[in-house]
Image (cartoon, rainbow, N blue to C red):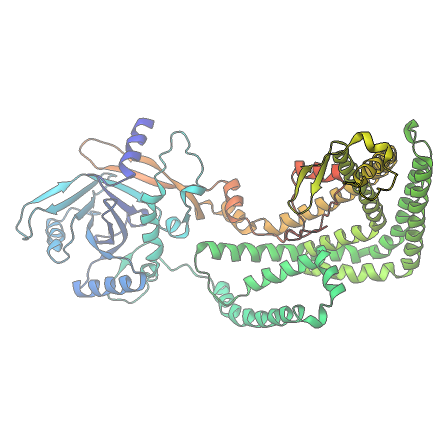
Length: 618
């Protein structure tokens, strides 16, 4: 069987002598009539779309096909005849069907026939060997492929870049060869708008011939969506204009708003709502899927936010949070004081510079005292602040999480100040030591050319560096003075570096702990913003909607009869669904690589979790 499927793959991948007839399974039990569809000469394929039943008038059939071709831009034509012998075979019907080829001329002319009371099928494709109707005809070999018309119409065939690897035993046809079949069925949707209850001149059989799928709720929602979207679009435009007004964006506020995660998330939510309520129709399936994913993401986010808000209002949890916040802040400040007192002694038995150690310890203890005073000053208003901030959860769980990230930044602002002070002092010493080390090696930094150049020093005259240059000498001795002073500064900095590095190491670890917590919060926000929930729901409930390709199952393979296959849709894997339909996130913090992070930490550069990607300054 695998060898047979490989041969089928070779035949279906491109044009050949074998004619491929794609026949819908819904027409297998239809009455006799005409086969209506599209001929694809590049693939030697005939895509049957519907069956026209007797009685009919040829002129009316041609008018219907012309209307469908004008509306769908698909070359729909009569491809042949369909004979379903439910009762005793009628010779007159067979002769009549054979004579229809003179009224609807098409090359090749298909003749499909299903025998009475059996599962055997006959299929022929004839071509005229001359321009006249009396010219002799030749027959082509036909391969009959059944497909589910509804699934093919509703599915979207993804490009080869998004296709998964081929599975063993499956014959997955190329996307280029099957794109014509999927495109033909998708664009011929106007042909499927009539059912057997319509009083039209032509009676058809297709996947909706028993009744057009429709829902009263869906139709009412479609009619109400237009005015609602127009009203929401006007409101959002007013909000966007107000947020862009310079009156509400003076310099301090604009700088603070650009650093807050809440403002970034609100701006991202405004863009999401603008995309959803836009009056412009989606230009393609990708943009339509993006709108649907965005709508489902916003609705789920707001539902989770309302659940969180109801949980916070239940049993007066805002008061409990406010009562627990001040003791927690006092506990953190107390632990920091113990840590600083430990650093001001002999931490881990290390010999520190006592003068510098005392200065840095008292400096940081004073900041902790200021921070405790600030917390106790704000304690009467914390409950009201939390209550008003909790109301923003109705805008979505991501907004509440962004507010939580900003609250963490405010509550740990003293740790951030300690980290900045230690990092700046450590960075100053590192850069000073590197500059003085170049001075030792007879090098200097060329500011104009941005490179390290050589600089010669006369070491024999170093001890005379303090003597002012005499008049008439060719070269002053300021180079030797620089070398002597550089030696003294290098010695001082190298002995003060352990004390500074220890303070920097401790506060950097505390800062990294805060950044890790904020990073987890931002990761959850980005996950909610970017997860394509609608696409994942389609993949879970209706996997045929997201097609990665097709596979074929052999129905009949007997000598003297056409090969009959069943085309089945291979769904797109979940990982490819997430990768293909992932939504853009607000991205309010940069992604540092491990090498870049270690380099920044070693040289004392500041780490900003909320720094914008476009910022080039610390």
